[in-house]
Image (cartoon, rainbow, N blue to C red):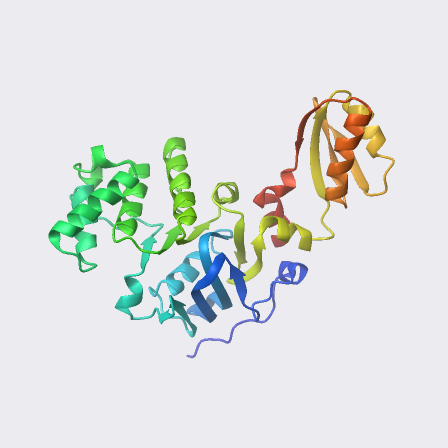
Length: 334
């Protein structure tokens, strides 16, 4: 039986943001490094990726969506691990599928473990680096460099079966870094890590992006990706819902009020002053401050500052929970 054609019923959120799969999604900085056109992939009668076209430049890009959204399938199509039913991917201008030269340009950190458990971490990374075509001595040098990068030098001699979940994640990252690729893919890299390991991985991913590499990070944990990048692609049911900077996405959601949290001296006095303005949609109080919902966030921020100065009300906090990725994502998938 032939595979069904890609479905055309885009989620409501796609219409809200203007992100349509017939268009090319563009994320990252500078020249295009990864280019995919009209990618689709099916698991039997179930579609995993539905007609996605995307250009990715340098820096860190977050691929966000709930479990089962199609993120891992898209990564496998982008890295040549799956052959798409339709469409194609290039990295650095070279077609990825069945192309060893293209594979050599990328590093991949899978979500699932696939280890030789009796091997030491050092032997594991060295072995995989040799498979990239490096000599024994060069592979050993590169492996040590990558292991040091993920702060595992002191544990590198131990068999992987003795590693904690966080250490296993870091040794997977080391094998992806060892051959010094310019393009890296991370599939749920923070799964199972402790707070210290989490911070180590987040800082590493940010540093790789700052170095000018292209880094694609897949995750369903939105606040963690927000710590790595503001350049995002939101995906659900195999389709792109929205893309770009989080603030740009917010601008596209005109009907979604912006919620600001304020802590100050005499919060009820400041809230009363704000209630007189037409763009103030709602006010609610907490023990130490209040939330204001507004249709004009830039104007509201300016007004809060000026009213505080005018009435001598010292501001202790001025934040917006709506700038968290989770607020945007909840709205887009609703």
